[in-house]
Amino acid sequence: MMTKWKVLLILLFPVFNLEAQECIGGNIATNEAFLYGRFEVSMQSARGNGVVSSFFLYNLDLGCNWPEENNEIDIEMTGDDEGILFTTHYPGPWYYTDSLGMGFDPHAALHDYAIEWEPGIVRWFVDGQLANVQDHSFVAGLQYPLRVIMNLWVSKIPSWVGVWDPAIMPLESMYDYVKVYEYTPGTGNYGTNSNFTPLWEESFDSLDTKRWFIEKFGGFDGNACAFKPSSVEFRNGKMFLQVEEEPASLGKIPVSFSLDASSLAMDAGDVIFLNGTFNNWCGNCEPLSETNGVWSTTIDLEPGKYEYLFSKNLWEETGGAPKESSCDFNPCDEYTNYGFVIDNGSSPLVLDTPCWGECVTCERVGLEDEIRKSADPQLFKVTDVLGRETSQKSTGILFFQYLDGRVERRFVSPD
Image (cartoon, rainbow, N blue to C red; front, top):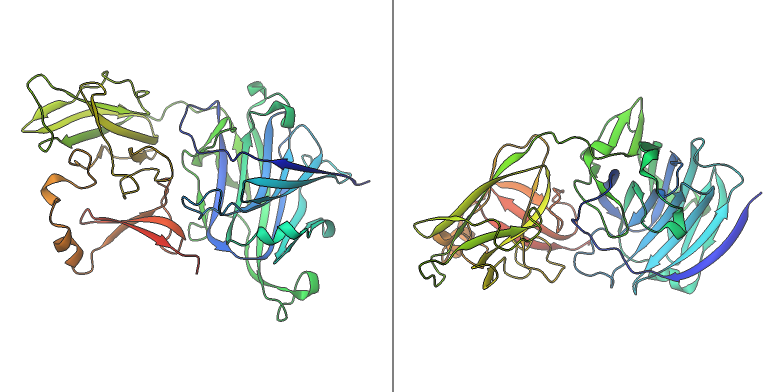
């Protein structure tokens, strides 16, 4: 017997955060974004107070335009309840949720779920049957291309999901397939009014990096877990997202930091310090050594995502990245920190040597025109605003890093 109730609430969007987490969880998303379509999944959610299983669509390419371009369409299950949450999110930010009891336990077995998204209407299906519709006037606010995302995480809101007990780890949700259909009104052959055409199907035999990327060291406020690749597994033709304890360290990686302070007025006795998320912005606990105006140090760090800047004489002056430059690790916040990611098994990392408060090395200042004129520079990698490696076809704010050391910041339109 299906039960239903509606909730209209204002949401304060959780912002990305780099603080220590209580657990690790899994998050996987498509490289491509879709404007309208039908999206199907076969999944079994995880049981347990505090845990949230999901299949949803999200505007991952909004860059710094949150909440102005906030769009999301959800299917979520909380581990303390057998209901299904069907939610849409809008600029503001705010959201609208329909919570339904479907007459079965979604944590006990695989079930089929689908989202149909057309202009002004969203339909949800469960095991092939229409379960919910939102066609209110505000649904027209869903207007941006959205990525397909699945994740498993632990909420810090016990009134919503129950009180989290870490003793129940490890937990896992299971996914058998995902199917994506284009929105092709008038020419389709599937779904409501035959408005959709099959585009592709994912059977999860292994990770297809051309189609998916796994979140590395990400997270958000309200989430007790950090997302790490080790919590996404492929076994026997299925994908498993896990919530588990932080594994023992696989070893630390030497990271070399350096700064050219030759442009900075320095007196005898002045010292440059390194401050970052790895030392809790401690002020004067990490002094650098100086040689011919270049200040440097090497420290060992575990794999993860880090931000940092330099300071003179404790906090007398600070030297970070120019605001919204390609070196500004998170250009959407108010801070101007450099940043980097260390992968598991990484080689020792030697970071660039910027001038004080600059985004280029001192020997390259004034040579931008020559770099710009270099013929066919070889691309090294493309990253998004959170430092995640992504595809050149992704949209939003992207950073193109070339083998000659040049970093180019571009905004790629969904068009």
